[in-house]
Length: 386
Image (cartoon, rainbow, N blue to C red; front, side):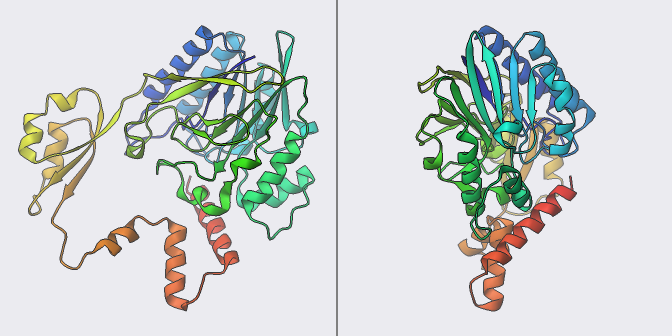
């Protein structure tokens, strides 16, 4: 069987208030063309279909137009909810999209209740174990549904690993076994454009817990394309476009997966050409003026201008000179007393800042249960703001 693995579309995501929906739509058209050209049997979309729990109507039009076109080309699809998706909204569409052979899984489920999606093509059968994103505050509900018996004091990653193993017990020797999950795997490299709170140590699954008898593991969550050292072939396909400047220079792709029963899959990366590249330019104002024609070639820019002292109106002048400048940063001499420690603090995640604050105030280690409560509240605040 032939699969196309993709993930992290983040449809509707803007870049500094600039819509990129036209780029996202062009990239999805390119994915459709690749799927047809490569004679794909099933598309695997490993989460973060949308960027927001409440996507715009235009973002939904692009997403469901894609799946309608995919169905029209007689290509099956399986897609799961990621941490940016609203599981209830996606779950409501399951009966409708299922009639089009577009299989949605918004919540983790036992194998007998949809946790295993079976696909049959050309007298071959695939069994796809699906692991949508499970928020930490929903973990107990997920375990009850799966019948898991993990100790509640055990970390998130261990409890997720137990549920993964429970799902994969339904794999068979006479079919193609695929694991698909929106997961953070220990040792994988983030781009800095993902939600930092979901990349902390408690969320990190160990790749060695992946099932060795799976033909392939299709992963979503991290935006950098990469392969994971695991007992089975395991890849993050990466995001559809360069979403922010942390992904600058990354070649985006989809992964073509050829799999047969009882064998490890063969993978091929197919680069995507759609979407505008992101580029950082650091130069003095005079040089930027000299290079203006070159810098309006189509890339979206982050422009850094070193100055000896503040110059009022510099940002507006630069944006007039370079219409594709998304970010404009002025680099001034560092004030006396600002040191490397202050710079390091600015790079800390919210949970790391809280932990540092607690330790400085109480002069003791932060209790793990307090850190768990902080991450939960922080995530709830993020969700409520979307």
